[in-house]
Amino acid sequence: MKLRNTLRVLLASAAVLWAIDASELRAQTLTDALIGAYQTSPLLESNRAALRSLDETVPQARSLRRPRVDATAGVRAITDVTEFPLDDLYSAALSASLLLYDNGATAAAIESARLGVASGRASLIGVEQDVLFNAVQAFMDVIQAIEFVRIARNDVRVLTEQVDATRNRFEVGEVTRTDVSQTEARLAASRGRLVNALGNLDFARSSYLAAVGTLPSDLSPPPPIPELPADLAAAEQLAVQLNPALISARFAERAALADFDRARAATGVSVQATSSFEYLGQYSLAPQGNDRFELNLGLGASLPLYTGGLNSSLIRQAQQVLDQRRFQVQDAARTVIELVNNSWTSLEIAQALIVANREQVVAAQIAFEGVSEEARLGARSTLDVLDADQERLTAEAEVVRAQRDEYVAAYAVLRSMGLLTVEHLDLGIDTYDPQNYFAAIQSAPVGGYDTSAVERIRARWEQP
Image (cartoon, rainbow, N blue to C red; front, side, top):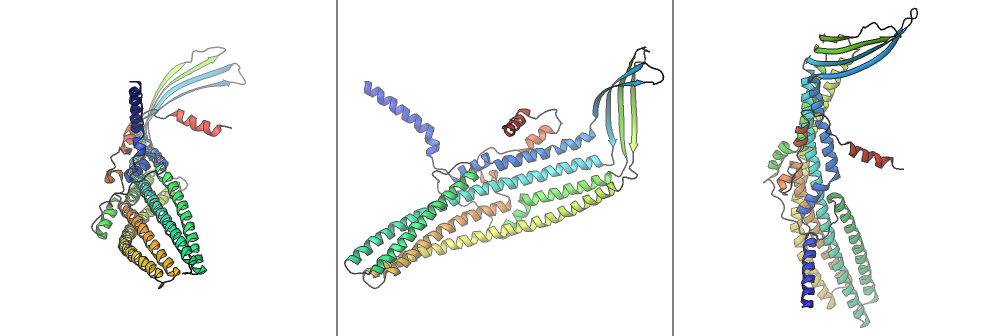
C-alpha cells in the first residue's frame, strides 16, 4: 500500500511538471515567432510612444480655441522720497481670455496636427511590418543554418568513410598515397565547413533573439507561403493603395498644406475677449482705507502691419516644406513600385532555382553513385569521386538556400503591399490600437502622466 501511494505521488508530480513544461516542449512555429516579435519589440514600443507624443499636438492646437484662465498675485513697496512713510501695495487677480477670431490660423493648426497624427499612424504600421518581416527572416535564417549544419555533418560522415575506405585500398595496393592525401584534404575542408556552419547557426540564433525576443529552441517547418496576388500588376495596384510609407507621405503633404494656410492666416486680423477680477490693497503706517475690487471686460483686435519680415519668411518656408512633401510623395511612390518589383522578381527567381536545384540534386546524386562505382572498378580516380561528392553537396545547399529565399521574398511582397500585418496574417492576438490614447486626450484632461515612471528613469541615470 505504501508503495502504491508513492507511485501515485510520483505520477501526479510528473503530470504537473508535464503541464508546466508543455509550452516549452512544444515546437516553436512561425506564428509563435511573429507573435513574440510583435509583443516584445522595443522598437515598436518606442514608435508607439512617439505616436502618442504626436497625438498631443491635436489638443494643444485645439487649446487655442478654449478659454485661458490665470491667477496672479503681487506685492510692491513704494515711497515718496519727500514724504515718508512707506506704502505696501497688494494685488490679486483672476483673468480670462478667449480667442474669438484669428483668420483661420487655429483651424489650420488643428488640421495640420490631425493630419500629422494620421501620417504617424501610417508610419507605425510600417514599423510593425518591419518588425514582423525581421522575425520571418530570422526564423528562416535559423532553419537554413540548421539545414546547412545537417548537410555539413553528413558530408563529414561520408568523407570519413571514404578516407577509411581509401586507406584500406592503399594498404592492399589499389590506390596511391596521393589518393589518400586527396581524400584526407577533402575531409579536413569538410570539417572546416562544418565549423563555419555551426558558427553561422550561432549568428542566426543571435539574430532571432534580437528579432523575436527569445532564443530559438525547436523550430517547426514553416507553413505554406501566404496567398499572393495573381500577378505583378495586381501587387503594384495594392501597394499604391496600401503601402504605409506612401500613405504616410500623402498625409504629410496634406499637413504641410495646412501649415501653409496657417502661415498665411497669421497675417490677418485676430480678435480676443478678455476679463479680469482684481483685488487691490494698500497698507501704510497711516492706513487710508484704499482697498478695492475691480472688474474689467475687454474686446481687442490686432493686425500685424510690420513684423520685420517674419510673417513673409514663415509663408515662404511653409511653401518650401510643401514642395518638399510633394516630391517626397512622388519618391515614395517610385520606391514602393521598386520594392514590389524587386521582391516579386526575387520570388520568381527563388522558385525557378528551387526547381533547377532539385533536378541538380537528383542528377548529382546519380552521378556520385556512378562515379563511386566506376572508381571501385578502376575506371575513375579518387579525385573524380571527391568532385562528384562536392557537386552533390553544393546542389543540396542551393536547394535549401533557394527555399529560404522564396519564403522571405514572399513575405517581402506582402510587406511592399502593406499587408504584412497582424490582422492580415491572422495571428489571433490583440493589437495596439492608437485610437484609444488619442480619444482619451481629446478633451484635454488635467494630469494623465506618471511621475513615478519619470523618477525611476531619473534615479537610474543619477546612480553613482
